[in-house]
Amino acid sequence: MSDTPHPDGDLSGKHIVLGLSGGIACYKTAELARALVKAGATVQVVMTEAAEQFITAVTMQALSGRPVFTSAWDDRAVDGAANNMAHINLTRQADAVLVAPASADFMAKLLHGRADDLLSLLCLARRVESCPLLIAPAMNREMWAHPATQRNVAQLRADGTHIFGPASGEQACGEVGDGRMLEPEELIEELIGFFRPKPLAGKRVLVTAGPTFEPIDPVRGITNLSSGKMGFAIARAASEAGAEVTLVAGPVHLATPRGVRRIDVRTALQMFDAVVPGAGHHDVFVATAAVADWRPASLSEQKIKKNGSKIAPIFELTENPDILAAVAKQALVAGRPFCVGFAAESHDLLKHSREKLERKQVPLIVGNLGPATFGRDDNALVLVDAQGHRELPQADKLTLARWLVGDIAMRLADRDSPTQEKKQ
Ligand code: C5P
Image 1 (cartoon, rainbow, N blue to C red):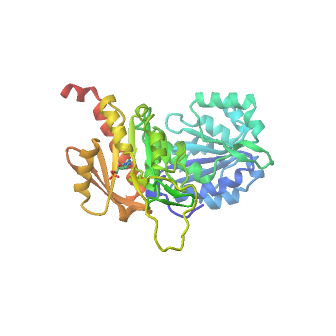
Image 2: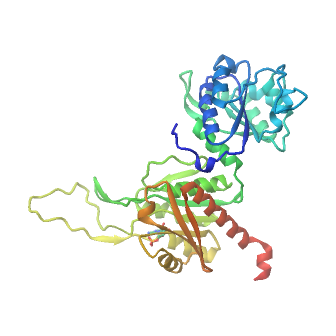
Image 3: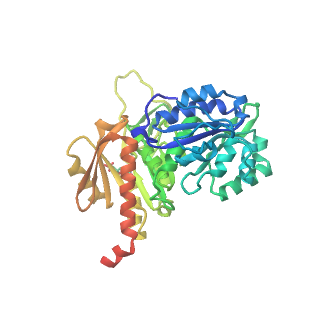
């Protein structure tokens, strides 16, 4: 796991009760505990007897920086409470209980409200309205697929439990399928997203990201330096804000944000086809991609070779369709999606952004300085609309993406609010 700190200590101020039930995935929870602390959370570990067969309380204590609780009969005081009842006090200051791994057996216990060990006891005794229960299942694929487990999953969801994962892949037993616990960094991303406000709940957001690659021959092409990081951060921020997100990505090597549907494309024409026909089914379209303006007019089927004549080949270029302008044109008639364009400029940012606002007929353009942002983890933005402009100062791209998504959510709410309609 990378040592890069999470932007702005994404979990700072959060107190998490981290519960471990029995499963080989306990080894991942050691790293999860460390990652939670690095993200700014305080972590109180509680382990079942079965979990102690897989990892020791000493390890978890060292990583969380707090004594571990394992027994319902443990009468140590928690947070100075006088009643010495760990099963009550452990969750009273907690922002969530996260059980990782949650075994099939532990899920069955939760479902029935059984409470014969400290972890299940505190899950039952927590205040449901202030201390949500989050579980990360981990088990063999047959156990996961079993109707009993699936019934339990459905009922736990109905009872308000949030279920992270599981992932699919190779299992400790050697079988391959659903049931792997999510990786620590995936669980951290889920948890951070869980705590974010949800102003885009129920909305559908479409994002383009990255460069396009316009082939010249089978081994060469025209592309640009866009890394895709800003667009991926926007997709993540929109997903965290509760939206259903589709990300149409040019050729980049970035991990897909959790919960985001990704469509990979290579050329501008492919991006156009992946975006334009379905764009009208979305509430928001954010065109972050650095789409190539031109493509070679014809593709050479074979690698273009030097022929010894010293005369360099000449390419004819043809213009690519403007994806944003095409969606914006539809939106003028259909009333959606709300279109946001990006302007990556090298100078006169405000002037060019405003020109783009008018040329593309969109309600919002986000300007940034191309050479200063391509490939980097931070950026500075200026939001330009018909009324004026607002600067978002230098920050990491996820922080900027969250501000931008918050701003877009407010614009949608303003547009949709009945009071606004009355004023007009
Ligand atoms: O026209 P220009 O490339 O300067 O505008 C940039 C904005 O338009 C970006 O939001 C970009 O994603 C979008 N765009 C597009 N299709 C193109 C060119 C640009 O969607 N062919």
